[in-house]
Amino acid sequence: MPATVSIHGQWSTRLAFILAATGSAVGLGNIWRFPYIVGDNGGGAFVLVYLACILLIGLPIMMAEILLGRRGRQSPINTMLTVAREEGLSRGWGLMGWIGVLAGFLILSFYSVIAGWALAYVFKSGSGGFVGLDAEGSSELFGAMLASPEALLAWHTIFMVMTAMVVARGVRSGLERAVTILMPLLVLLLVVLVGYSMAQGEFMAGVQFLFQPDFSALSANAVLLAMGQAFFTLSLGMGAIMVYGSYLSSEASVAKTSGAVVAADTLVALLAGLAIFPILFAAGLSPGQGPGLIFVTLPLAFAEMPMGLYFGTVFFVLLVFAAWTSAISLIEPAVAFLVENLSLTRVFATTLVAMFAWLLGIGALLSLNVWSGYTLFEMGILDLLDYLTANILLPLGGFLIALFVGWRMTERSVQSELRLKLGFVYSLWYFLVRYVAPIAILVVFLRAVGVV
Ligand code: TRP
Image (cartoon, rainbow, N blue to C red; front, side, top):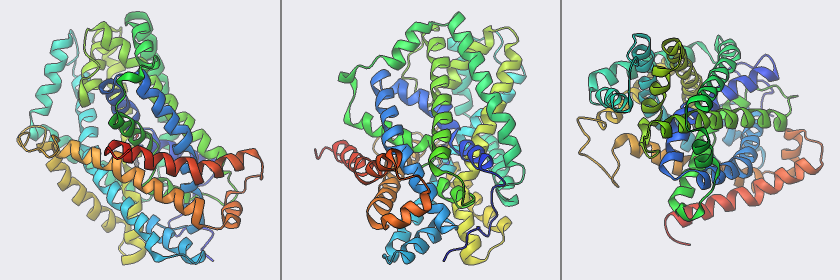
């Protein structure tokens, strides 16, 4: 029997878990990544596919991840090994945990670089850098930052140290409280921005762009990107939610908990989209700006709105916090594993992982300037890391989780861990995990490489 409590500690309440998981889910993925990929991929149809992926693949896999974590009560690698042993299955399932550790490490390396941009923008806003800014000036401001490896390195380093500091102290201390206060504040500020967009932006143009689907513009690769975004934004497929699930008390309802996290995450992404596109259209910018989208667009709103200096500064501070609570969940699986298996101290394990991710992050930030000539599949290191993790490793991890929970674990173990009344919700979930999620992932993969 695995322990009923993890050696790394436990959340004080179910709400604490919801907050932590929401903290992991809501981050740069919602506010930076979602708008820019939607912009790059033509809007409405992409958003619809994304929402379908959230509901049909993301939500059921999140429940599967939490239930695995709670059953194994360890880092993802050991959780998979333990549950596989209990069920009389191959040790090969531990591979899923390894994919997760690798994916988390790779994501953290570039995530920290982008979070560094947000940090830089806190100070650009605070020092009045957005005052009187027009669309051209805003693009120049962003471009100048990317062109400076020293500046990018400094912010990347600061963010990585911030992340390591929290993880080294253990996931619970400080984290719960930070999320309780800051997340609602972030949502509030996004609502203020949406209000500004309604008053000053091309609001209807933004709404149409986001919600009027044009399926003729949707390529097979765009569908893969939409699915990848669903995994990325919900922190799924690499064990982050699994490891948080391992700190969840045995009584909590997995279904309700997952539903709350998914709802909060989707709300934030849609609010970010509603805030950004109307401002963008009003400024005559193109939605296909790429990764700089929010950094070019939002300063325009802060330049104009009353008290924009304060709103802008607070907004980027909150964005940094959102990124922070996400980043810690990216290294937690690796750290938990090193503590369990190599008996490293938490502090040492964290330092080790953060240091290697920091080094790889330097490669990512150099690909924006000095190394911009070096590409593979037309992508620099940063884009490559992003593509490989979000669109390949995370869905692959999710696929394995769905197969494991849907097909390899006995239904009795699944039911006893889920503690769902055996009604419609359970049957629907089990059907999604067994059939819909794995088949959908497989088909999207095969279509993207042109097989079907
Ligand atoms: N979901 C986070 C975001 O949207 C990023 C993130 C945190 C993540 N942990 C993860 C992504 C684990 C994938 C896997 O910003």
